[in-house]
Length: 431
Ligand SMILES: Cc1ncc(COP(=O)(O)O)c(C=O)c1O
Image (cartoon, helix red, strand yellow):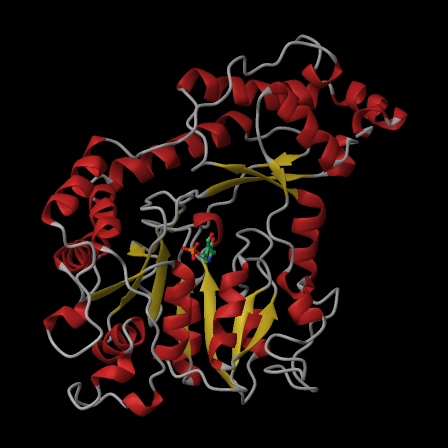
């Protein structure tokens, strides 16, 4: 193979990867239909049928239930909003502990704080990067009220085991399924195994409408509470039966009709959009499996991965080259990736300094959970040294380019001695 591109050779992926974009004629038509009709939002924050949103919002929710085989879908304006609403719906109160993985996007851990809940970080499994059920069990205290499992990068957490654990301890299991539409565990859709599942429809996800989210649940009462929190629930006092509206802190988390119309156009093609991403991830995995010093994403038995992100594991010792150098060498070959994911969340200043709201330690308290460095060693190792992430939903390589990406990895690994020598001179990281 020719000289490495980072050392002056020709890149293996000759043309830049096209950007993944599924917004087309169907979405345009859907928006124009709403504009023609003139009803940009169908919500009223007062009693009546409009309390549950306009026609596109309600149709989206029905279609979501059909696609994901669930009883209720409650749309919101982001997955972050969905996570906050979920915390309110399950009744998180000041001082309640909520177990969350240390390796996830910040919204997972910040959502409980909206109701005064305290995130307790637990480490992830080495193979799947999702919550380790044994470590979750060990972290349960009398203050624990809920577990938020994240189906990270699109791989289902051990959802069935976590649900059984939650049920046996009288806890709620909420799934942050922002990244895993159509992922499955034992044939059951991720996002539908916990008491509440939360999906994201933001611009970076498989299915998108710019910004948006959906909460799913089988529980009528939780669905009603989610609907209340989404739409100034306190304002419909006296008409909503059993729900304790004195304890239902509402927001405006409503989705517009234009956004819902785009989301409907997307979910009409959900199978092809998502399966297209999965096929690319599998083609890359197949081409790279067995390469020295590199591990492809693990798929647990009886699980279907949705591949929001496709993550390589680098063994720098075997390769003799740092992850940083590997990332740069691959980028020079035309294979974009980034090092690690979000840093372990307890490194965020709000946890390190124990100041989320105000300056007196609320909601953590003085004797609250540990947020010290070293808390979750698997997460720290994966993030700091091993994971190299390719964004499956950002790029749309042709099949020829997918092969070139595979070739690029092989080329870099084959030339690792030259890379190591160049690394030793310091020339590669002069910037
Ligand atoms: C795991 C996870 N949770 C929550 C979110 C928040 O989603 P949104 O941007 O829809 O609020 C994201 C978004 O990237 C995510 O990846």
